Image 1 (tube, rainbow, N blue to C red):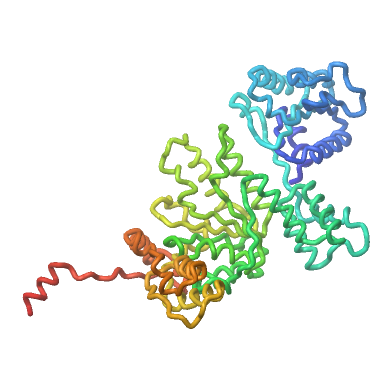
Image 2 (cartoon, rainbow, N blue to C red):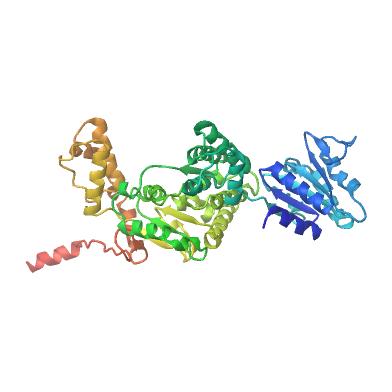
Amino acid sequence: MKLRNRLTEYIRACFTGIWIESYEHQEVLTEIAALCRDEQWQLATWDIDAGLKIPGQPDPEASGSDPLAAIRAVNALATPDGTAIIVLQNFHRFMQSAEVVQALLRQINAGKQNRSIVMVLAPVVQIPTELEKMFVVVEHELPDRGQLEEIARGIATEAGEMPEGNALQLVLDASAGLTRMEAENAFSLSLVRQGRITADAVWELKTQALKKSGLLSLYRGEDDFSHLGGLTALKTFCRRALQQPSCDDPRKRPRGVLLLSPPGCGKSHFCKALGQEVGRPVLNLDVGNLLGSLVGQSEARTRQALSVIEAMAPCVAMIDEVEKAFSGLNGNGDSGVSSRMFGTFLSWLADHQSDVFVVCTANDVSKLPPEFGRSERFDGIFFLDLPGLEQKNQIWEQYIRLFGLNPEQERPEDTDWTGAEIRSCCRLAGLLDVTLLEARLYVVPIAVTAAESVEQLRTWANDRCLDADRPGIFHWESPRRTSRRSIKHLSSIN
């Protein structure tokens, strides 16, 4: 439902406290002004710089920067048979004042009698405890593809400036998740640079916008599945899931995968390559960036990040080392912030209808709660074991080519190496100008440094996870070591 329709319902139902969450204040004010003209409602706006403004009337003498006077001004606009609305811009900055909170509380209650509505327009939702039950929160959604195309056509007015067909779809994919002003700036920049609207300039501005928010980062690389050795079953599953026509049906859309493995087995590399393989942007959600210093800020930033992810659909959302991201679940003195953030994320995983494919990676499954991996949150839980002989041959060939090494030279015996360790060996050989056998001396595999953890992870994944290399369930048998008692027994027989 559009913002105007939601506001109309709340105002007619006499909701006297409305909090509008938006970064695009001018767009919201334009919609509210048009609504008030159509409904013949009285409108006033206030901000700390311009003071009180009443459209169509001269500035009142009492207009000023006093937030208390602004709250009381709405009563002067009220009429016996009409509705009066005052929009307070960026008023969250004054919510720490006890006088402002008390004045808002009194005005919202009194508004039921004379149909006077108080609207707070702010980019964040920071409602004091005393007012939590008094406000209804309305989110101003980011522009959809139709609105973005309308903005683009409003800018590209000359022949040849507006893309069509598949080129237009690429531009709309790139601009999804931008505000109206950001999209307008991106389209204008593209016209100045290239004489027509293209996706490249949009991607550049979009990357900057995500960096400024601090909530998400955008990965755009060139590596696809051909640059990633092994993981045949996982590649096939994700490629088929994301390239099926049923992705257009919200009931059949793929949800994502949870990848479990020892460090260095290619989980993060797979996620980045997946985006390039299926033509989707990869958004990296760093949960640490969502933490805020104010009460409720972390939860609000979590909702905001998920909202941006949905607006950028179709995309791939990546959460690396998810067990560390929500480490506060076990109780580390954060007053339950991590648990609330995790609950919000779990609910979104199960309920979202957007075309977002979520890839979570983990190295330690013992830190994840059981409900995290239940059905309908992920399409599958895959275990990425240490690569086998065939996969390692592919990885060796790939990195030998990448670092310009002699492909005929002898390779180390690497029965327990991960892909990251093979890359490290090849990089060191090129860096130090030595052979692979010499570079091998500087590599200590994780199967040695963390042998117990690797075995514990394999034991847990046995018959519980899907195999990333072969279709079906992952099976692993621990090597049987002959006990000291057995050796004595064999000696006595001889």
